[in-house]
Length: 362
Image (cartoon, rainbow, N blue to C red; front, side):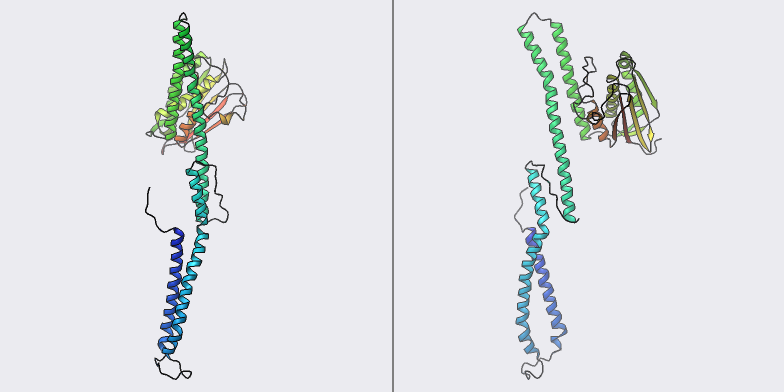
């Protein structure tokens, strides 16, 4: 935005200080005149040295007062300039940091020393903002790089299959179409997951009353064939747990949690338990599954995009794209909730989602 040039804040403060000193000096001279000189007789031809005369005092007082006023004005200008410079020095550092941030350098910090005041509070808030922005930008760059890699992989496979088919016309066409369809399905799933993750991060959804227990039952009914195929017991327990949010996003959140619990389970005879309830006025969803032991240092990374808890290669229709728990984390964050992951001592994972409950919900 283009603005007309104006006075700097330092010059404005200097003129303000100088003006205040000048006004104070003028008031002081006025007080002297009002309470002293007006009581002196006005006798310009009086006996000098015998009795005081207003005329004589004015002749002596006015030049000295003029010199004093000039001194006060100069002193106010110089002192005001110096004081304003010292007072605005933190603002200069904040402005420099803002310019660096605007040029793309987010690693710079002000770190203003001294006791707490308005400028230091502003500097601390600016440093905290820079830290959050830098972390967010780094996360977005890492996510973009991972997404590009994940999207490039199915495209490269498709290109390779097409090149092989073009060079070898006798290749089985049905096999080629099946593999192309599988690769294309994975690319579509990944794209939809990325779009859903972006939507939940933006928080652009309509909020409504949602019962997590009903969603858990719907998800369990949908994924029961997958659990039975893998000989995994799927149980849903608990009571109603109402919260406010997007039914679609919360359905995807529960689906991802339960599907992740089924897929990353024991190969035979595992169990998945989904429990809903209310605790301290908050709606709680808990998904617990058996499975291979997880290293404690691995658990915090499971919610990062394209991170997988195990290196198992899955060739069925439920093969993941590495965004399941990342989407869960994003949905929970968009609904002002908390997500807690804990490795079970016997193996497997315990995921606890806590969302704000609706007033009056039991």
